[in-house]
Image (cartoon, rainbow over all chains, first blue to last red; front, side, top):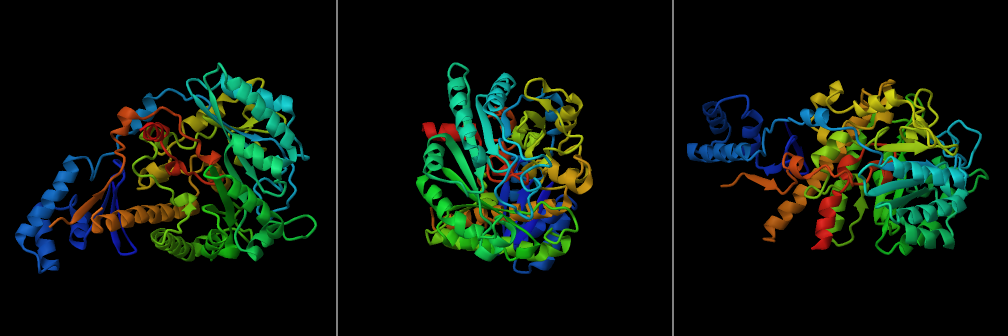
Length: 458
Length: 53
């Protein structure tokens, strides 16, 4: 399968199964479009009719270029990966999302966790439970060396001493176990202080801090109980922490909704504040909510993503670039085919742990009836659910079978699909459209930068 | 005249032979949290071999 698209003056051909990407001129674009459907003579006839400046020799050369790419496995490559999934053994646990707090000190309108409480009464994880979670992860991690733990909530800084205690225990547990922990802290930033900054710099591989962009946009959704502006409260804190990272990873992560379909301005606002690692995600909301995204919104959203890609290219040239998470595409050093087939690991490699030590397939499914998987003492007792997630992949989702982007999204987010359709084996179609657009933009940026290098003779 | 410029990418078919160590970051541990971002991850094996050079 190939995907051909035009964006920002570039003609781009993506060969789905091999991952090869080609920048082509208009003649090659037309030839590649019809190559599999018609014979060489027909290609020659059609192209000579359309491009009168060409002669037969030009077309023969072009067809030979295409044939060469086919022979090299870079065009019209067959997807034969389904057999790999069937023959692969079930994977071990690699990552936990530790919901150390089901309490939150903000009241964000769009929160998928029900004001951070996930339908509970506002619980905090005990250190004992956190320590057991670390042991549970090590015991079930098979051959994995690097184990990922995300401190999440609710707001994890409401249980900061327990976070520190868990990290301290895990570092001791690393010794002699052959494991290495990689911690992430995801916070609304309200309680960031010197201790959080210092400890995070020492222990957290990544710190994700929430901000939605412009002050009015941020404050409309990210609401403080007392009515004060959350933007004013958190901005100095996230600035301080991000500056202290000194090259270590951090992300300023926001959410856009139907209320800011001009979200390009929010990303630029954050970049202009001096933040260089940015992420802005489409809201996850029930259909029909005022702020939920609709298919009618797609044209303006697409336009925003394109504008963002062009602005980033421009700023890169001016040496004032920034990173946008969904455009972070390392085409030479990205994930192998096994990772692309196994997806995000929901319910198999990745589990969420509640403050009480219950297990769920991921943070977005915590507290949902039917998704309880067991606990950190007994382990995964709902093996049917684990099998359901293990057996859910791009070849079991009907809509993925014909989609050119399937080896990039790995079938999409199962939690999004379930929330939208009630079935983890279906897809969240609006999310698919957004993903494909972002991917097209990200690939276009790589192509444009490569062509620029070539034209500069580098 | 060359009408097709192939951009350097990781050959996914080739990665069948060399991939699958399972050490890469779980995507929701990074900055997504509400969407699948597998492709935005880096290959740990390749990252390490670059760092070792």
